[in-house]
Image 1 (cartoon, helix red, strand yellow):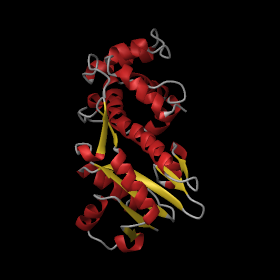
Image 2: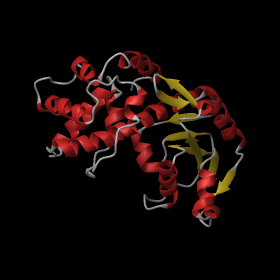
Image 3: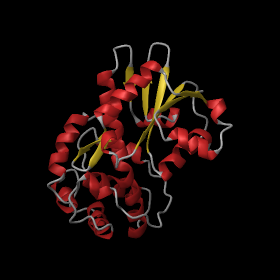
Length: 263
């Protein structure tokens, strides 16, 4: 797996290239194959062809009628980080996966690509936060961040201590983000495991909470310091069974701040 520091260096290259240049630059994509042809057309549909591959390029992709095809973007992202990653190459991997699953309609694939690209910044943010937390916590802690534990434990980053397991949920402090985290804990996605669950909401428009690297918004050092302090002190902790009794408004207010849910 690529180190986040290496990916940060890639970002210096990304911001100088547009998506068409990015896909042409990538030697891992066969320029004579069907995937390349589809990528070129989809970049045009999504109006990304001439856009620079900075963080802002993926934040304003419009939501279309997007076919709910089972494409695991987390797997595509994490598998690609073992060799090379860029926004354009990530698009190519999604397109290739769609073709392998038998989806050949350009508009359908374009919608799926849009959904995948909107998730791309959160994958980078997760990797970066895992690195920042691991640097700050003592040797009594170990950090895991991979798609397997994401699916199994409903957690983005798993923090293990000698006698405790702390799962963290990363999400944006937006209406959709708060609805998703509520559904993750109390909806129909399956039971969350017993233990401590760390809430990590972020407003990417608040400078104090974010570190901006060429438009890619990561958790700021100050935010991570506060987060690690919360891990040590266990302040603002609520019991899962108590939150079950709360109304939507009260849950939304709690999810809007850093906190810990114990189940």
